[in-house]
Length: 251
Image (cartoon, rainbow, N blue to C red):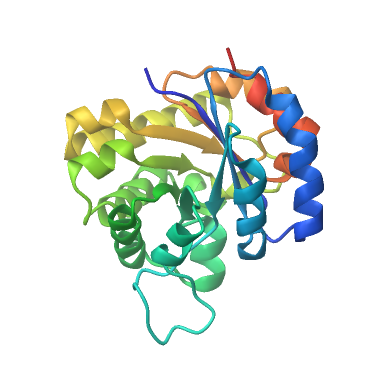
């Protein structure tokens, strides 16, 4: 059984004071949410505060990015060991906004995944196609390219522990949502690509859907056989809406 994961990606939102108000509102709403893991992916400035405020709770704290090098002349960057030092649980890698605006490549992401693995950090690797790529029937080719190159440096054990988030770029922040059939087909294809690398790992790897996930569509999406949770954007910024999504899969 793969334990569902609901992870909220705050992107560039919330000061420390705002994050503290958020978490004080969220934790009571998750008290009875069993059978699900919950993560919040927060800006660098919020990391320490959220790690401290979630200790002993079911909420795990993820960074939104990190550099692949252990240290060096990389102004403005953060290493895996720096995240480890403050007890961050994991890191999101390869979000489409990082790929598009900051030119992150699959080769770089492979290095980042390896660095996260060596540091003992959980990793969520994001993959997905643009609207034009889907219109051109290139979804599977794009996913194959991203996965084959992005997963090239990790071993089967690390692969089995990985979380992969399928985020159709055309559905991120647009209000558009992949149909249940589109989401299932893409996530099943991702699992098949993992199986081509290691069959056992494909049964353990968790695949999330991301792209305008909200409380009113979460139940249908999270019931799909190859969807093991959600990477939530805008709906993760308010405790009530985020908790409702968690509740859609909790036991």
